[in-house]
Length: 308
Ligand code: HMG
Ligand code: MG
Image (cartoon, rainbow, N blue to C red; front, side, top):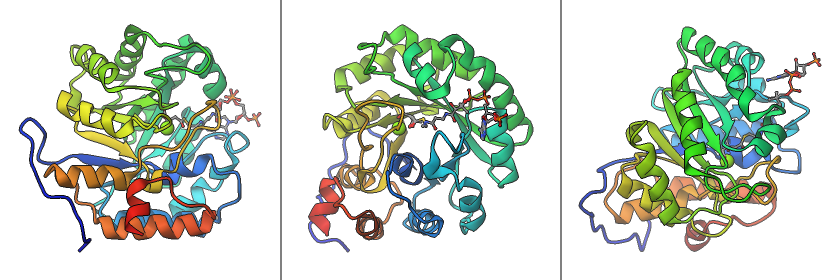
């Protein structure tokens, strides 16, 4: 039992439980400059599942020369001990990636779209208008193979090259992803610039097109707003929150992207609000401390620092 856990004060209007979509092993590690052993990644994923995380995004089947850090995706998938209580989604950018992912035993995949032209070019090497041409066959084949499919949308709240992003542009991409067969979406604040008012405006408008129970939020914490944005999302009706153990994260193809919302910071807040997550905070902190030792730098998570 952790000393100093917050008093539980449940707030009307918030859900009794939420799903934490843990992205540390994928978003967290994809940006790491040094080599991380495949065994370390496998241990990280197993520890995150053992800490009670219901979704542990494991890796990406992208071009290995684009993201060398995750070039060992198949080995990682082969090495993990799968818990029946945990989902292990992987990123796939196209049918080639999907084939590799299915071959590696993935049953849960995610395509990743952009809300802006510049990031589509930089991250996917295609024009904005072409991204769905890739995702349509990818999602169809994934569904035909029985896989669950999430659709990410990046740059929902700001783009380092294009500046502000119109709500309508984000909603269009969400609608397109839904139309090609994505069962759930995740709204990415890739560069961590969003603020709660902006989040609530997008969610209010989006709720006219997509049920918010099928929408997750994915906040990077560059400007320290990730937790506030999460709270605003919960109030709006979102029930899935992306977070990264220890606050790791970033995108190699997005200037100024820093770490994701730290899972520990999220669990601390939700615990105090009486919202169940099923996560063992002590085990999670121990995992992030272990990983920080391997990466040789302290975790940016305030809760990890406070508890370790
Ligand atoms: P491309 O070069 O345009 O692809 O890359 P292509 O179809 O023209 O193929 C060129 C060559 O690549 C071919 O090989 C293909 O076989 C190979 P060749 O015939 O020349 O020998 N190839 C592949 N090899 C392995 N796996 C594949 C694959 N696809 C093609 N899947 C592509 C297009 C999308 C593949 C490339 O741009 C890419 O890999 N991008 C990935 C970028 C990335 O991973 N970014 C980070 C994840 S997104 C993110 O972090 C944001 C998120 O967290 C949310 C948020 O924060 O907002 C999700
Ligand atoms: Mg991200």
